[in-house]
Amino acid sequence: MPAPGEWPPFCVEEAGHLSRSASPSTGRPYGLQRVCRIFGIARSTTYYLKARDAVPPERRPVPRKRGPVGAGTDEELVGHIRRVLAESPFTGEGYRKVWARLRHQGIRTAAERVRRLMREHRLQAPRRRGHPHGPKAHDGTITAEEPDRMWGTDMTTTVTTIEGTVHVFVAVDHCTCECVGLHAAKAGNRFEALEPLRQGVREHFGDFDRGIAPGLAIRHDHGSASMSDDFRRELEFLGMASSPSFVREPEGNGCAERFIRTLKEQLLWVRAFATVAELAEALREFKRTYNERWLIGRHGHRTPSEVRRDLAAGLPTAA
Image (cartoon, rainbow, N blue to C red; front, top):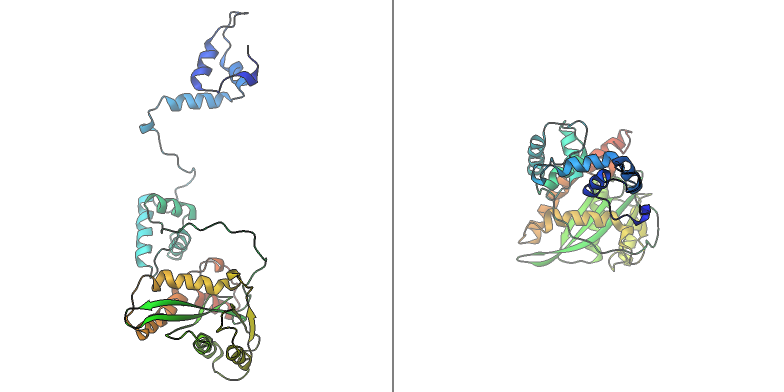
């Protein structure tokens, strides 16, 4: 008999044939136990494969996760998923946010089940494949433990059908992920770049005066507007500290960058605007909707406004 390493690849037919073959020396069948031991395969596996191959492929059951089904049948849960996607004011939400919205409505199920059903029914949002990144230039975190300790600010551009290119400036709280300021202007200079910060100061500090925002750091990139003397002087007037991110490291200003991505996907890339005034009105409405209804995963899928209210009441930041 060949050595174990010299046997051909194992299959059910070979095991069955060899087990019934007679040994030339003893004249007795080898038996399934001896054949499986030489192949290094459990007998239960052989019996399973033999029973599976006896059933045509089209009649084989689709493998499912074992255990309780959960909230209703798959068909009922798909209906709830479609309803949540239709009711949401945002487009392209992933399975985590859909799962969180279902839980908020009292429909408790597993996130992976929601993911599977959305994949099977083609309800997942399309996404672009990124390119591989090299090693990080630095480690650490940019999030804050309390509101109004660090705000991130940045600028993007969009196009109006009548007035052409428009600059959009944002300001985001690094703790709550709340949009504290949103501004649109034809010019992209240092004075327009300060407007979202002025909006946030008036709303969250109650006034606009010298030294009114001590201890608040402003994270920004190395753009000409953010590095200008006028920009820095106004930060000093308000009691803020300048906190520039690393050069060519957008992750350092990731809170503002991530908000701009959401702003593009939910508003700037899906609607057309004729004038700057029309865009500015849409930005004001988007700010309210985002702060009250956008779910933040690292805060237990709560909205930015809920996180601020809970922190003001002394509740923890994660659900």
